[in-house]
Image (cartoon, rainbow, N blue to C red; front, side):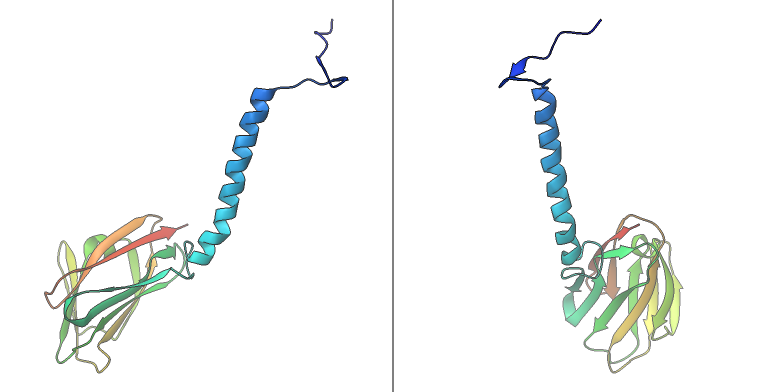
Length: 165
């Protein structure tokens, strides 16, 4: 036994569901908006290597830390530390919350001494003309990480990163 006949709309028997159609329209508009934002976010550097991906943070006494805000879990990324005045051996302290999320694959130049403490790791570098140290690191996990980099007991420079899968 068939159900009731659909109502006539402009001479046609059409089964309408206006509530469903309105919900579907809203979901469709949200999906189009998200899809439009994906390429914009990629160009901006939200997935690494874009216009706003790399950042430089400065501290007191001519200290700068350059790093990518966004990284990929399987890709090496670099953290560059620069000190304007590198007269003698320079101590650089990196907090554990930042280092614990990364495997360090290379440090250039090689540190003269490394001191490990419960909350930080101190690297001592010999004096160099450039005053630059480069850490090549690979993320361990998908997560947000933040920590500090401190030169010779000065003011800590904050580093905030997010790692994508």
